[in-house]
Amino acid sequence: MNNFLGQVILSNTIGDWLWTAGIILFVIILSKIISRYLAKLLCNLFRRQWKAFDQQTFVDLVIHPLSIFLVVTISIIALYRLNFPVDLNLVIYKFSLQRIFHTAAAIIQVATFIWLLLRIIDFIASILERKANATLDQSDNQLIVFFKDFVKVILGIIGFLMLLHFAFDYRVGNLLTGLSIVGAAIALSLRESLENLIASFVIFFDKPFTTGDMVKVQNITGNVERIGLRSTRIRTLDKSYVTVPNKQMVDSILDNISLRSQLRGELLLHINLQTPPAKVEALISEIKTYLEKPEEIATFNVIFNDIGMQAFIVTVEFFTMPMEAGKFTGIRQGLNLFVLQTMERLEIRIAAEGKDIAIVT
Image (cartoon, rainbow, N blue to C red):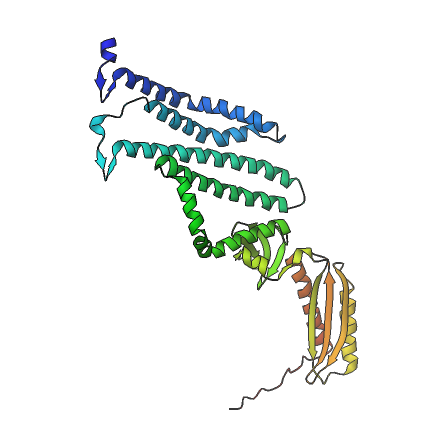
């Protein structure tokens, strides 16, 4: 038996091959059990910090990447006990097969480790989101989403540097030194992205608006649905999904409609100059009577504003408490229809109505 186990195949004894295969097979079979046990140990650490800790959700998130990471790591350690077969150590494009296997193993190991960390970040973010949903302030929710994405980007960069170091034996210190030299050039080439990133921090800490607010910036009006690292997503009144760079959200004049104490509506009536003053007065009186009825209208003004060269100008102005855009539009529409019906009943014409327009060439 000892003679059989001592036979050398591919630069290693049969005993060494069997031990390595046994260890790998053992880990593959028991990887989920081991990873579940390790996940529960991590649960005990997190539970001390968060009372709303959901153990089952955490285990479901991390058990798969953790089991793969364990299999990959222990397999690499086991394979390191073996001598790489001399007969298989071929050179492919100036790289030996042993070097290629080593690089592939390092890539898989680093990738699974970063994957595991990303799952843990997702779980921590879910706990914080659950706490934030219990409060009325929506800024906490968008701050959690922002920093979750930000931490994931940082982990991605760290993972890339780990790949350079462990898989390709690249000196990361030299890379960082080089980046400090060319940092100005990179900053110039990525100036717009950096400005948007800085603007996102300004939005989160200065809080000119939060998720769910209705805002007007430049010629865009709608509800903020998401604030990201680079841009803000707005659902407009016609249900379009508009992406606005964060820099424009900070640098432009922004009107947060949701924070208005009241909403203002205005209607300008240009009445024909041939209209008798009594009819104008009657129109103003009926509009005031109409505006007194809706409970949503807090205050209003209806005044004979001006006598122009071409029309009498009547200004109708009303204010309501903050409400949904659709409901406010309905109030304006009702007022417009009432004014048209009243003008028709009082036989009041709009200025320039019925006039011929001559084009002289």
